[in-house]
Image (tube, rainbow, N blue to C red):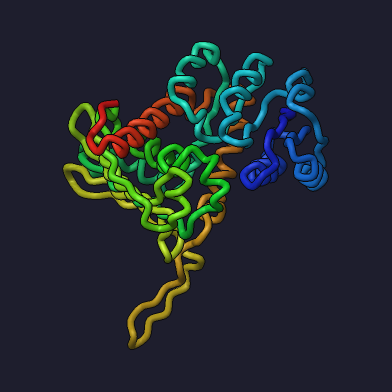
Length: 325
């Protein structure tokens, strides 16, 4: 059984903390958050103790840390945890600045660093990837990714998130690279503020279409919006020489009504924590394997690759032209 510390007791921290508490091979020993009330409440719920980062990293009994704090702290906490000899579970993105992350990369050499791009742990997406690997549709040619939020996040979050490309689309950049099977060499992004003027006033966009091109000419099209109006829309299509593979949305229930008016189904799930609940549990189980000695499935190179595409998309939007990665 490995003792771990959780840094961050906000929304995603609570999810990871509860999953850690129910994952075989892990014991949550410490909860850390600058908001004392949040740390105390989560620690009391999960039977852990409140600590500081320094106390947790200085404890030789702590085998790993889960970093679920604000994005601008991720990289520094990864460096500190690695220096202390801890295994690391880090929420995406690794940092808000690609150049800074690349400069720090040598200091993370040999780190047992798992970067939590949770969608790779979704059962539907894993089945799709397995079918690609099995050659069911032949050579991959194009990928379509639809990732639409049901409604915009709070404006306070937008101001500190790093922007749509680094915060939201970065999941899709990682997924696209994972499915295309080749390095992306060019990005073209067209984006605007069509949903909420406050997002534009905060210096961000809320709607984007992004085209990726690989070294071998394969293409991926990503559609993002902060408001679908109909639920949390998560769809992926992979087209190959022999056909198409598709991973669709999950519904609130599988019950359908068939009447003279036609078939009617339940609405799609409306919240990312519902849609990816199983994926969050699966990635914590993977971290238990990392603590036991398994190599992380997603590491620093993956994190830097996704962040590079996010920065290229931002540059393409700013310049109004394709950008080489």
